[in-house]
Length: 523
Image: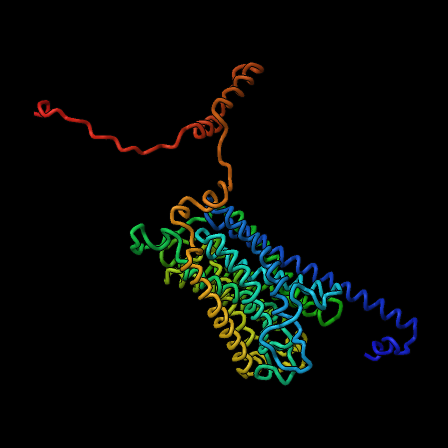
């Protein structure tokens, strides 16, 4: 600080020393900006992971629709967070006092205070998080939600609902923040949610849960054509397992921007230590969540059927559940605690997924168990497993209350539970009436016939895939040309079969009048 003061204008510091100081500071700033650029880009890449996972999980007739919604999430999130959201989340309170504020009030459209690279990169990094919160909802309401409704709630979520949660927990004047002035810390501590188990994932997951309840299940999922409950829910098979697993790996990769990137800097020993720990705990929790969910399902199914089977969906979503579960405490827990958090996250995912089915709540991609249930678990887990030394590095010496197993003091756990209650209450109060209004206005759900045909054809000018085979006459002409050059050539059976299937018209059911029967002949 003394060197900084000496090199300030009029400070009287040595010119050579001050020039060197300025150069080093510039390098540090550049390295930190590049670190956030990489981390933000990795988080933004998660949009493609969500798109691949959702596209693989839905039926073939709805692929275009879900892909477009994921693209528009990024666009709507960028515009909403640029115009209003960032100002509400991080805008300066514009007063000299140290009181907490419900929302920010400056920086709309990035018009004030944005003149340097570090201020711009801060917006970019936080935008990627906002887009993630919005895209969680896409998979849950897939195959039956209108495009107009999707655009409305995507912008509303990123421009207002999500920023209020961000401000309360992450801003320097948030009423639950661990970064606010010491005299204003909530219960003397503030909430610890390092990378957003609650702020991002619970907010998006709670929105998805409310949307699924208001929107209702897909046709044929829990009820028959007459509205009678089915004895066993219908399972709609995923149309591409390859896309599902690709999306899962892309999301896992993106989490290395999500969690380590939340250190917000890298060019100092403390931030480097925090980022390194985050990478380790993120990996361990994902791995343990994956194997726990899959083998729990395998064991329970084997007890019921006597046969062992291994469900890929359980493995993928178990890994994602572990990633969500570790996100809040990734910088404040030990590797062994990350393993325990991941194991429990796998069980949380499995149990909540079955609970939704029991309650006849249709989540097309199981986003609610992954993000809402495990987001809740991740926030609570900090109150149990936060370790004193790691917490002091990631936060400050003022944040002294640690996890229950270290301190025996339940104060941090109580603080974490309060944040869970706050997020549920805020999102519920905002999004429930919002979705109800959309439903009453007829803007929420597509027409039943359009849903049956598929949203690709009914809303996007055709199917996602061209599955037409070659024409029969073209195949025959090709064979004749080859035969004229090389003698008789047999048409491969697969080619002939594909051509025949492409040429055969679809069967049409027609009601034929019953033949007239001569009464005398009958006699």
